[in-house]
Length: 171
Image (tube, rainbow, N blue to C red; front, side, top):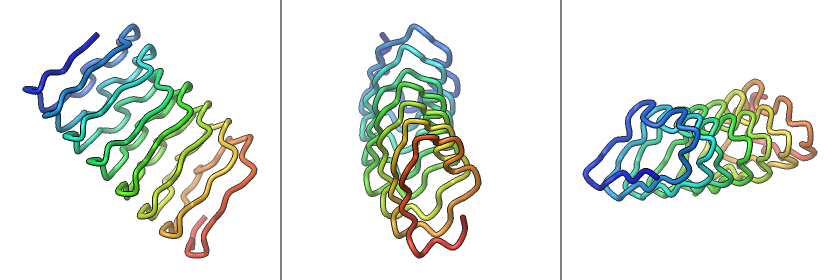
């Protein structure tokens, strides 16, 4: 078990990377940033609550973790590149409407991901966003999206329905 006290403002780069037996992390109010790859490869970490004081979560911060679900706190407006890539147990991500950017490959190879809602305000579906999400069956893209980049849905073998709004000018 790891408890990050209120006196800590940043969880640094690779801080707990590849701590494969780390199953419980408590993050305290006062934490402002989780740096790139901070919890990368923590395969026993199935859930984590991010306090509202956190305003930035770096790239690949939770990649290849054992997370089963995740709720993006209201204080976060951007989801970093590769944030949940290779989280093969991740089934659901709750993203609030204040998120306006989802980085490339954020959900790449999340093979158990069945549900994700892209919020209004997001303008681009980044490259490889859902690549290899073999359990994803349907997705609705909000009217604010104007571009869907390469490999966005590559390898989504169960995907049967994608609603693309008329404002999209590039696929």
